Image: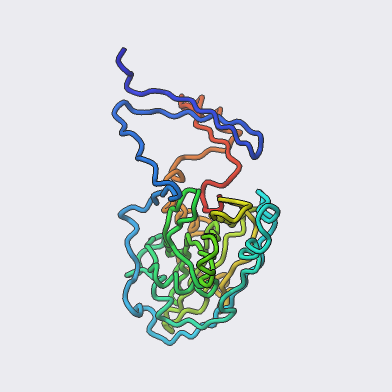
Amino acid sequence: MAMKARLACLAILALAATGTVGYVVWYLAEDEPPPPSPPPPGQPIPVASNRGADVPDGFRGDVHPLLFGQTRLEVSAQWTPVGKGRDHLHRDLNPQLYRWFTDLRPASPRQTYTEREFSGFLPETVGKIGQRWAIDGDRVVSILKQFHPRPSLHVVAAGRRAGPDGAFATLRAVSPTYLDIVFRIHAEFYLTPDDRPASQPVIRAWYTPAYFTGRVLVNREHGTVEHFRLGLAADKALNVHLTVAAKGIGDTRQAHDVVRVDRMELTGGDGQRAESTPWTSAVTLSEAQSRLASIFYKFLDIDWAPFDRAAALASSRNRPIFAVVSWGAFDDQSC
């Protein structure tokens, strides 16, 4: 019997963490290619971003023409300890090893940045409200080193989906005197100390924030940056993923946890200026953040509906319901 043009499939997802059972229905085209081969053991499964041709590279030169003045902005770092995790890694892992996570503090509590560092957050040329671009990754990494000496924009922590990678910005608001740029960054920190004796087992550890968000406020008249903020998203109860991959240490071979960190932030300048400026044209901060998130995740292009309206909409439009039940967030790197 020949296969029909499209085959309906039903999957049952049993989530041990919550005891919940979910159902997913999808359709497989007859000529759809087979899924890619899995990566080698121990290597993360990569996730591609949703970046399209409408998101070009931003400025990649030395100093952006907009920053013709002299910027000397002191930026302070705050980094609070990890909370107790959902999966109790603090209880199951060797206490000395777990201190790699609990003892984290900013590498540099205060640091001064100039127009050169901030130029990498700007577009090649300023366009309309809502324009998006990719930030200079090297400059992002150099600023993230204020937290820890080994940041990366390439998420590789073992035993989990890797990425999507990237750092992107959007023009949120303009006025005759100011530009407000909002950005989102996916990054990770490799915690294994450099000075571990070669005779000890190989232990690799990563600290993966859900994502960083922030803004750059540019004074167009003076050609300077007046405010900068880069901070861990704090809108969810759990916002950092901890990973340990080890061999021969006795208590674990690979361990994960999702924890709460109240504050991991770099701030400098006048943060109230952006709120008090009478903007000529602007989108809301929420809209700007949504537009940035959609660069990372293709599924955000779906026309989502609240659960209590899904059945009525499906009936009125004669469409099937695609439902997923999960204990973690899909739109960040926390799980």
